[in-house]
Image (tube, rainbow, N blue to C red; front, side, top):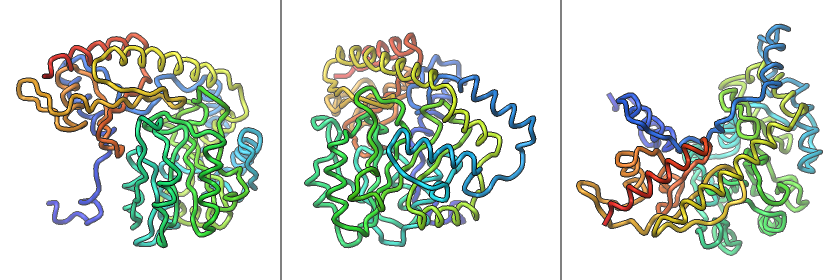
Length: 398
């Protein structure tokens, strides 16, 4: 029946993170003791005061449609957040609340890209970036980085990638999958490059903003050179452990947010109303749970990184954000065990899942086939056991 599917669906790649999560669930359903380190989801529950705000909103009747770009009171809270935390100045009509930051990125690409428009994507990149760009008719242009540069691009490579068809630059900081964080100074260099072309937009994905272990988070939109060219993407999933609430948002030039509202109005309309009321509490209420979660993730990072460093052949950097490690495991390419032959990161991930019962995500899905993504959004006990299983599994390869 595939012949009845659209060309866009047939050419679309399934999300590698969701695929691996399903494989892990399938093995668990067979009674296998699988530990999943594949999904980018905090293992903490949504803080109680945020959940309570949603219950109150339900009782108060916030169960109807919201305005397409979001409740005015939430957009006002986001304006305050952007100003106080990021130094970004917006009006409420420059904010669009969507069903997750993923929809925010989809809205942007559908509203701004014509067939053949090029979008520069910093590599490694979140798995959905390239697929969303292509779905909108755009052409991804990848600027690569390596573990030796802490997975941060060389500005010269960015300059070389810019061409007459370049429409936008898309990247995340803190980064999924690497955890790398661009500093204020590094973002300033990027802003100077892009600012020389006022027809190039910047889509800055800052969803992991609150999970930052180093210096204060920096937003590229603060630089005058690109202030009017930058759309800042954020949301509630990671910093407030609200993944299932599906709430993301953007702040940007009004002509862009108007276009995104137009797209959203025909696709989903507004996000759930009582969830938006709770999101106001997330932004304006007690930030202690978010701070405690960040500290827990930092502790886990050090734990997992130290354990990985004991595995022969694994190369690893020291990321300063998010909750991922992205080690280079290419040492094992060409090695084998019984019926397994490791030719790439996908083979490696499948081997670890089947032989070690640990679910990871192959780096090829993120544009870096020499690596593997490990989410440490799990208990310390699970993390210790997982790395032990990985170490035992790779010891069988020769």
